[in-house]
Amino acid sequence: MTLAIALTAACGPGKSDETETGEPTTAASTETDPPATGTTTGDPPTGTTDTTTTGTTAVTDSSTTVEPTTTVGTTGDSEDFDELGACAVPMVCEEFFHDDGEIQGHWDGPEGFLDVERCILTGLRDGTPGRYVYGVNTVVANGSSLETNRIIVHADRTVTFARHFKGGFFDSDTDSSSEVFEPAQTCTIVEAAFFDDCFENHDDWTHYSECMKTEKWWTDCVAMGPRCE
Image (tube, rainbow, N blue to C red; front, side):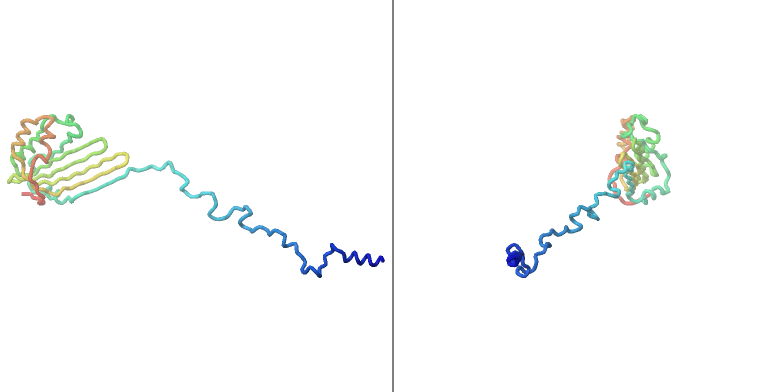
């Protein structure tokens, strides 16, 4: 009797029989795989994502000094101007450079004609052949310039002249200088009445603006090169 009870307990419900259920169930099917390395661990990625900025673009040098822009220009050829200067003709009057009365204020200069101015205008009025050198000197707060005219008066009451201009002016942003040579032109001297009117009506502070500008002295100009005779 005791043997029968023991056999019944060994084969009763609740005991798993490996020969009837097949392969045993393993614990691996319920475990969680470890996380993949390199992306979710919180370690900072390497390479270009480093937030530290290096180089010079993040620094401003406040000590940099900005220099004014400098421009230098030469226009034209000096050949005509030089050839007229070499003409073998006599000087009729001493060369003269008038201060620019319009810019500087003519009250800073002579009130009437200087002797050299009278010499130049008389020579032109009478068509006296020879060389004349006349120009305008301008000086202002931010620079200066000099205009020079080499003039040859011919016996047929024509004149050949060439002009040279050189100046330099500056401000806080620009420092510029220029030099200009104009080609020789041959012109016809205006009527003598113009010069007579200057002496009669402008022997005062108006003589510069009315009588001492070269464009008032001649007309019908043609660019035909240097001419000495």
